[in-house]
Length: 378
Image 1 (cartoon, rainbow, N blue to C red):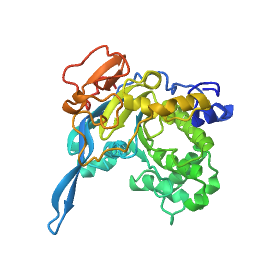
Image 2 (cartoon, rainbow, N blue to C red):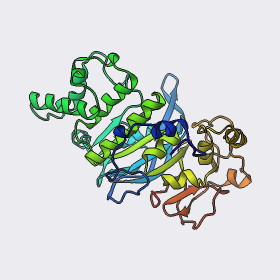
Image 3 (cartoon, rainbow, N blue to C red):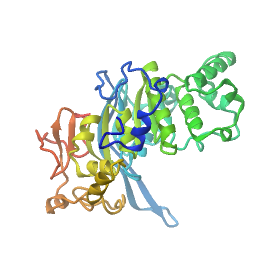
Image 4 (cartoon, rainbow, N blue to C red):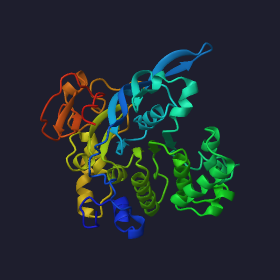
């Protein structure tokens, strides 16, 4: 990922310039190598709709289609990257995975357990293995609490260890994420954005989880700090055998950390496949549009891309377009796109996309697999 690459983005340039000591050793967390573990997370036909209520009796006036028939699988030790514009439903997916939201229909299985069937009294135990890094680290940290108390809180809630053991655990976690021991006595506002994100990561690691959902973990940080946090996440993944679901609007960030990429548009999963394959041979026009928005250092190449960018605004999730939801912004849209929803088609090993007029040549048309049913390719 050097600066001579025609697709080198600022984040990639920063990662290339990161000092050797900050780059994790390749102990198995290389995102170019497909994960071979057992399926840890299985999302099947997930639907999440929010009713719009108004009037004196709060009658339902409509529905927000936040997530519509989305399916994918994440293997143990893998990093699954979920990418898309703001409002596409990717954060809702993350909240559904950690059971902060409840499905309208469909299922989410974690380590063989159907989360929808878990009783509230048992869900706390399940959440030891499921943790969330919030998009805004400052808003997710209680400003009235010392950082040591914030990191210790999950251990207190789960009734793990004595006070001394919890204190030692907090100090060990701070050391792992690169913060000094004196941080325990400071408040969140006394830290920079990158340091607050490290605190959020330490809190997520407190219970030794198996899966961490990282919602926009570096979106609010400077590019050079983004590189440090991403390298830290990869290093911790190798050390603790973690599985990540990384949610981001930046395809360059997702490509760096993820084994597999899923692209969402207006509640639908439109493309999924190995990170390198999706980035180099995108089959869906929307995926290619996201790639073309990544800044490049070559002015001529940047100018040539301008005519291929995705135009217009994201349609309303209250009344999504018929057929293919991307058709209102797609340069290749035809009448078929409005009349029929595209099925997921395979474009290579583990690579699938839902498009009537794809940018690549399909190798198969799986029967009965629609835009929301890509579990066979994840």
